[in-house]
Image 1: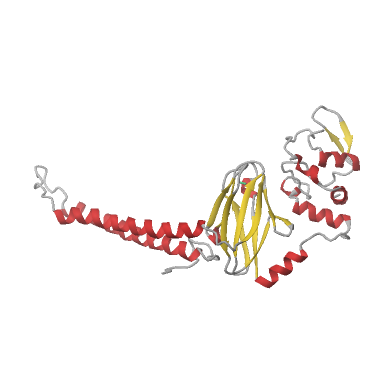
Image 2: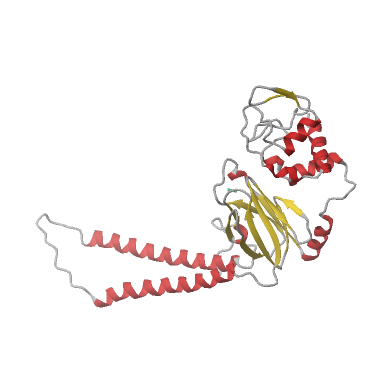
Length: 313
Ligand code: CUA
């Protein structure tokens, strides 16, 4: 029973579990509305009908009615049990991934999401999945608590450091859906957005095969890709605006002033150090928050990023 689908109050329903969640929600909203109108209506009626008319009026003693008392105990109990049973069933379904689910690993970072597929492909802020197939996300955080939330799929799960949590869904319609971080995780929490891109099944296989980085990609192009995929953009703009870290615009060749007052010209070796050992010299006026994880970039990737930064003049 679906009364209203993707209305003003509910986002599009794009997973197998979404219509079930919506039905339960609609049922409960309907019951609540009926009860609300009944209670407020009766109250209004009594206020008018039995209002005090004279100063010395004494109300008649009220006799209890067993039937009425029983009714307001039994009816709500039944309603609550219906919702409990119904809700529990949907809950079990939502939290029990089918054994044949396609598994993708999710890493939460301040402030972006990284996805790793079984064939080693990694993407940032773009989760690609096939339609009509159960997908299980095994999720962990590299820093603080985040929460993976896809309103269109009606699923949400906290993502914690030092352990795995998981989530599953079966997307029903190809398209793009927004992922929100639903747990306050610092300055850029509200900007921690990603997309789920649902492909038709065959197209997903194609995407997966083409998603690796070709060996012969030119450095600047690879740099632009890494800027996106390694989420440099979440802290470094390329349009000159100030984010958590300095902008890349006009960075190459400029003179940097550090916390201890010393200065240096941003050449290739400076950029290399700034990427691989971000804590070594921290630019004045900026917090020392860049993760050390970029030390795992390959020599070619570092060269590509430097090439990309050089171009941002
Ligand atoms: Cu991550 Cu909020």
